[in-house]
Length: 74
Image 1 (cartoon, rainbow, N blue to C red):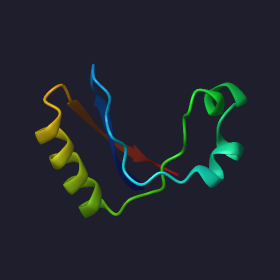
Image 2 (cartoon, rainbow, N blue to C red; image 1 turned 30 degrees about the vertical axis):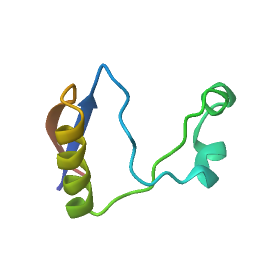
Image 3 (cartoon, helix red, strand yellow; image 1 turned 90 degrees about the horizontal axis):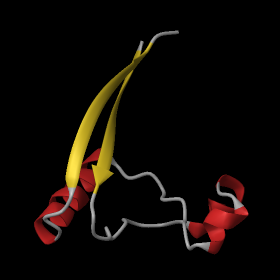
Protein backbone atom coordinates (compact mmCIF):
# COMPACT_ATOMS: atom_id res chain seq x y z
CA UNK A 1 0.00 0.00 0.00
CA UNK A 2 1.02 3.55 -0.66
CA UNK A 3 -0.41 6.53 1.19
CA UNK A 4 -0.42 10.08 -0.12
CA UNK A 5 -1.87 13.35 1.09
CA UNK A 6 -3.49 15.67 -1.44
CA UNK A 7 -3.77 19.37 -0.62
CA UNK A 8 -6.44 21.19 -2.61
CA UNK A 9 -5.94 24.94 -2.28
CA UNK A 10 -8.71 27.41 -3.13
CA UNK A 11 -8.70 31.19 -3.22
CA UNK A 12 -10.86 33.89 -4.77
CA UNK A 13 -7.73 36.05 -5.08
CA UNK A 14 -4.45 35.12 -6.81
CA UNK A 15 -1.99 32.85 -5.03
CA UNK A 16 1.77 33.30 -5.44
CA UNK A 17 3.01 29.88 -6.50
CA UNK A 18 6.24 28.39 -5.15
CA UNK A 19 9.20 27.70 -7.42
CA UNK A 20 7.88 27.21 -10.96
CA UNK A 21 9.80 25.22 -13.54
CA UNK A 22 8.55 26.32 -16.96
CA UNK A 23 11.04 24.11 -18.83
CA UNK A 24 8.74 21.09 -18.50
CA UNK A 25 5.49 22.96 -19.12
CA UNK A 26 5.58 22.31 -22.87
CA UNK A 27 5.41 18.57 -22.21
CA UNK A 28 2.72 18.71 -19.53
CA UNK A 29 0.36 21.51 -20.61
CA UNK A 30 -1.78 22.21 -23.66
CA UNK A 31 -0.92 25.10 -26.00
CA UNK A 32 -3.92 26.99 -24.63
CA UNK A 33 -2.71 26.60 -21.04
CA UNK A 34 0.80 27.72 -21.99
CA UNK A 35 -0.71 30.69 -23.84
CA UNK A 36 -2.53 31.84 -20.71
CA UNK A 37 0.68 31.75 -18.67
CA UNK A 38 0.30 28.46 -16.81
CA UNK A 39 3.41 26.59 -15.74
CA UNK A 40 4.07 23.26 -14.02
CA UNK A 41 5.46 23.62 -10.48
CA UNK A 42 8.33 21.45 -9.40
CA UNK A 43 7.93 19.21 -6.38
CA UNK A 44 8.69 20.62 -2.96
CA UNK A 45 9.83 18.72 0.08
CA UNK A 46 6.95 18.48 2.56
CA UNK A 47 8.55 20.85 5.08
CA UNK A 48 9.10 23.57 2.44
CA UNK A 49 5.54 23.14 1.16
CA UNK A 50 4.16 23.50 4.69
CA UNK A 51 6.19 26.69 5.24
CA UNK A 52 4.98 28.09 1.89
CA UNK A 53 1.37 27.23 2.75
CA UNK A 54 1.55 28.86 6.19
CA UNK A 55 3.16 32.02 4.77
CA UNK A 56 0.62 32.14 1.95
CA UNK A 57 -2.33 31.79 4.33
CA UNK A 58 -0.96 34.60 6.51
CA UNK A 59 -0.65 36.90 3.48
CA UNK A 60 -3.87 35.81 1.75
CA UNK A 61 -6.83 35.28 4.09
CA UNK A 62 -8.96 34.06 1.14
CA UNK A 63 -7.04 30.76 0.96
CA UNK A 64 -8.96 27.66 1.98
CA UNK A 65 -7.32 24.23 2.13
CA UNK A 66 -8.99 20.83 1.77
CA UNK A 67 -6.83 17.85 2.69
CA UNK A 68 -7.60 14.39 1.29
CA UNK A 69 -5.67 11.27 2.24
CA UNK A 70 -5.35 8.74 -0.57
CA UNK A 71 -4.44 5.07 -0.17
CA UNK A 72 -3.25 3.18 -3.24
CA UNK A 73 -3.45 -0.60 -3.09
CA UNK A 74 -1.55 -2.63 -5.65
